[in-house]
Length: 255
Image (cartoon, rainbow, N blue to C red; front, side, top):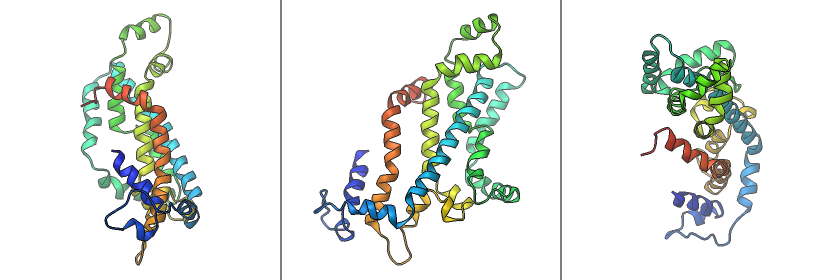
């Protein structure tokens, strides 16, 4: 896994010609740190980073809030047809996102949301995604029901049980869902490419695509920009690694 990352860092410090040298070399001679400065000024990358970060953080808040509420309902609240409706939710995983792209675009155009981050954030507050609901439901089912029964005897409401008992005990699963959501929003190219029209609203993924021209491509700057784009993901995984692995294991998703 580390080989592509090392190749990316090495290429980001090389000149255009040195990147394509054969046989390839791992250590740049000399290392060109100016590539990082040029990559940041070639396009307004600080602005792109800010836009991507805003969309990713809003996505994480939306998914954690909505999917945990849905998952709690499917895991702990008994209602008619619970398993049937949960099966319908899981069945939506079979529907490719590209199939709903056109009707969604028509709806958001009529709402006047195009060229803003609203189509990339607001819909996620309504459900949070079938996979996230499934993952959190599996985790909630591992928490002893006796804790909820004791809280009900003490007069705690159903929302109080969800908020005061389930959520604090579900940190590993919530962090796992947050990492998956952050990665999906951070790396998303299709959504921003469809809904964002002006450079002021572009994200990092669109900025990276702009390094590729019809006549020439600045591979040295693209590699430097890609290394900067990967950095927040590595920092996030480094700090959340312990909870991420625990969440995967306790929800039964390990191989």
